[in-house]
Length: 291
Image 1 (cartoon, rainbow, N blue to C red):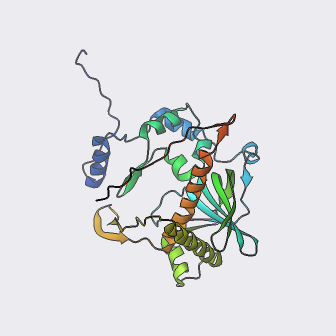
Image 2: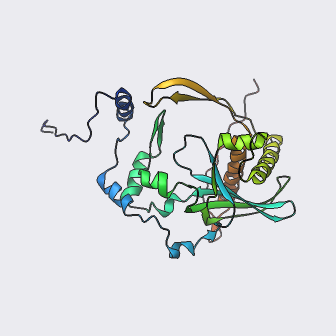
Image 3: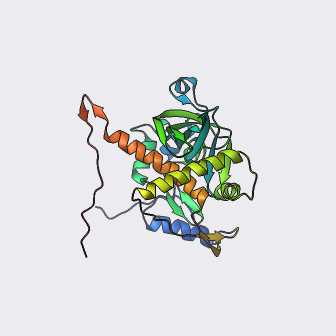
């Protein structure tokens, strides 16, 4: 109220990098923070990289099960993975694993409060302004190959025809064996590559296509559309446009993720506490007009 505002310089934007200035200005003008507070960074730095034995014993161990990720070529973090193991003839255990951020971000901490303020990561053509510090989002909670990771998982017993026999939900520990790009996986599916774990990728694709066919036969709408991505040079200047198509490699991940989402939603909707059904939101729509 005394009209003597006080400011603090937190970053200098160099005139020589027009792209860097443009991206920083874009974030700042829309109210997104350009850096994490010191207490948040300090908290993130104190988180150990090694998962303690006390935590491991509380999780179902999938580290010996073949597991891999399929993501875009330019992905910086890998937050979901797929595992597969044959149980018996024509029946397979397929796991859908999501990075367990809640293990690292505890309630009422500086990390939790900052993530709440940010709400989401913000994606720009040449970068991501993350919801959590890079050490968490790109290291601890990124399902990188050859590293043990804490995850939440939906694990299914599925036949080769896409029939779900049983499912299990819970906290797990995984160890990714390989990182595929969508292009790598698509080349295997199209038969132009003999990449690692070819048989398992082809089997997962076969099951995913069965699930997809079932979904559309039950009235699902195909919302697939072409996406546009900018091709950037070494200075992050746009030099072209790449049209991204939804191919079977994308559908493989999409169908298994949808199966996990539907299963979790149906399960949570029926959770009871002391014989009382927990309140649960439903998305409903009015009956369409006849016109």
